[in-house]
Length: 282
Image (cartoon, rainbow, N blue to C red; front, side, top):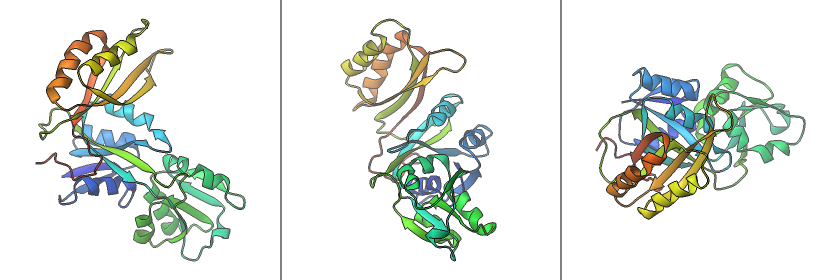
């Protein structure tokens, strides 16, 4: 099975793949960006892709909502990882040598307090995934440069850890989703859905939509609004819901859909707060 990720081995997306498929032989398709992941799936170069969708410090990764909604993809699974950030550099470096820090923009957002209070002048540079930026320090012998990445990255590429657990909060989590082509037959026990829709500007339109969901026993777990591209001050809603019975969700959407504009079902899957291996292939 081929899975596309935005990064290289040992980055957090790689760890998410391993959490989902610990006993499955997986070939990673490294991509240079989030967009590259969806393109690899669309071009059938990868069977699936894994994308971070939200972080407990940085919030929702809005770009990825648009990427998932904009293609013929579905969400088939999710996994939550505890994300601990480490500062690392060449083995000869000390923390007082560091004048530049490189990492992925979302990783840097998770370490704002640490970077703001760093002793000495520091230039923060946004780069590619955490592992790629760390590996580049070794391959290019970058003196005075550190990367922010996970602990496994330091061990894999022979970097020295200069500081540990530098993210803004101790219990830092990222939610990743597994995406694939639409129409794959999935396992049973489906109890979560991700949907996208727009509403008219009538008073109470959002309240009415949420009431319909509630009346059918559907629990709202997340709602995120994003601007509709090509329009002014119009928004689409990306919503996650959970339910005990898939039929309850189907009935709710039958009632709700006539009130919605540009409705799209992004995926129906199983909640996975316990980070169990994916049941997609069962």
